[in-house]
Image (cartoon, rainbow over all chains, first blue to last red; front, side, top):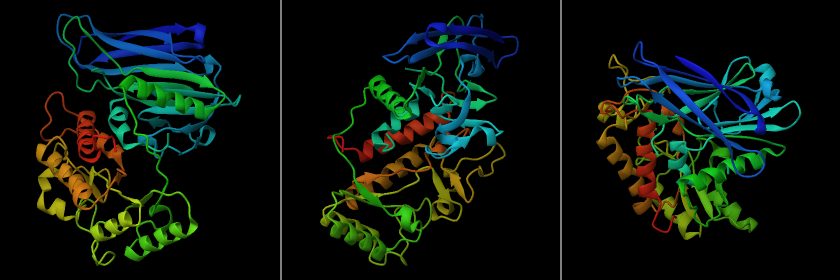
Length: 139
Length: 255
């Protein structure tokens, strides 16, 4: 397993940690990350590639990106929206009364104690691309 | 662009983004990108959602038709308890209000059973569902309908006639994660062809102009389809269905 961090202090996301593991025993895959500004307003794109530096082919089995929100000054008090496994897109979760994890397939919208909002969403989500034709009226 | 899909998890003040590899094989010395992630902070949550939607549209070259839907769907008031007269009553009230509505959408409850999408409940629609849909069109509205393309009730005719069309566990039992419904195995070509036939019939013979596909999350159930190859999996199967629906429901003018 490889593990390292990537920093983007200029744009406020400064505590991103990654780890990657291959299905094959004794084979190591690594994750290379880059973060860059996206448009106006402080948004960023996080791009990660899983690299196989071994002599044999490998199946990446478990790749995780962990973002320490508190270290970034984001004290999440409520999950406002997501999709897929967490239920309807308008479902709300009060973090203080939700001790279990909240998951979402495509995006998470969270509110912090300072009443600002934090958003994370896939930009290349294949399913999102495919269903966009159905005019998802939420947006 | 080929990439590995993942999902988000919030836990213990951390945002964790998980990727399980999608069974992708990386040759020696090569790399595969994960899905690109947009991160943003702001004072307006609507602006953040709009930014994501705009970024998706730009990234994938999506052009949306210039059509604004304003309409009425049967679910919020009637739930499953719909019938010809309740749809007609809703339509009459909308007409009397003089509001600019262009869509009347029939939701869950019309079908004989989940999965039996072309067979309506005769006790609710004795004159037939197509006739009601045509009446909606004649009144000046676009008729809409609700299907759940990944699901079939365990007692449906579809399951009785095609038990081999459902996702199964490694032990050969039906995958039971959406009871009382089962999940269709879209790794099979004949299942894809069947769904294409369903939506084509609804559009071309019944006059449906608006589809509200629901329970799409069940298409992302982690399970190996009977015809999945090494590149198969829940995301590719979901894409196949979405593209088939798009091809059969969206015309050349994008409508």
